[in-house]
Image (tube, rainbow, N blue to C red):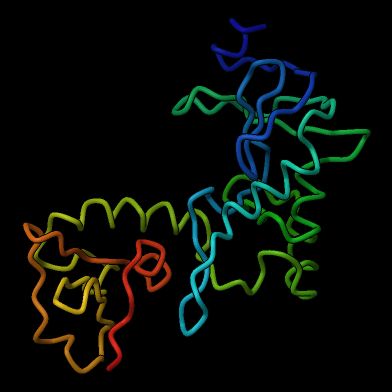
Length: 214
């Protein structure tokens, strides 16, 4: 079975679940990315615009773990992710499609880039405001792109695309300035001093920086 999986051939897996994060499991010693869904990354924060940053990614992972950890799952492979060397599969527990349940209850998004299987479930959850909908978090795929830009931005003196928030270090501590605030234009970023760019307000707050008062 391992050789089939390594080659990307279809294979079924069954065994107790170990939850890695909201959309990734380990079943029968294989890493399984759940088919057709995407959810907040474990280190992702929500908030901003006056709402304190909070670890919504960890909350999703912990909720999925509390529900499925140790339970017996049957997974039917739908694809193989060669980049990360992992199975993509539709998994069920006691006959319930895990991906469908997570989307329906607002714990995951339908990953329409790869599948429309859970489109209706997500729309219903969004209308009802369940779980992750309306929590002020970025769509996970956008968050991953933003995080990569933010890592690159740490060493730049000019703002990279999409990362215009200035993280400045002064006597007042680590302060970030949003575009349009009073001191934004005159604030300069010096990476050698530990100053940096941020791509979102929630990201800056999660890193321990506080918003300028004016």
